[in-house]
Image (cartoon, rainbow, N blue to C red; front, side):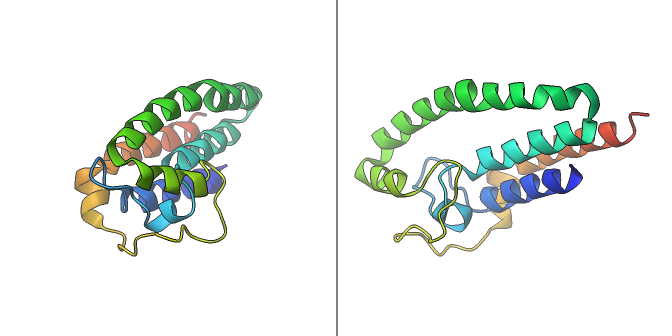
Length: 146
């Protein structure tokens, strides 16, 4: 489970170092392969934590995944897509028609940006450090639960 947690957070760190909110359609880094790497990272975190906690929480994993994939994501994505289509128009529509939400493509988006990962975006603009603190806290709580 811990490997899955680390993998999920690594995806989130990679994504937040590329994400430029509300200024452009981000197409560099993981965004060249899928639209929602932050959701994918979160999904891996949930799965990893459930496996780490084992016991009853493992029974909750299928329920949690159903709630996440069938209720939370569609509502959130609908609002987000409307907002992004309104703001960026055809540029976003072309990107969204190529890049899937959670299943990465093997080839990057043909108009993907080559911007490198930036610590400033990760730390200051997207404030991923707070999410990392939460992930580490949950990780420690599960490890030392006995």
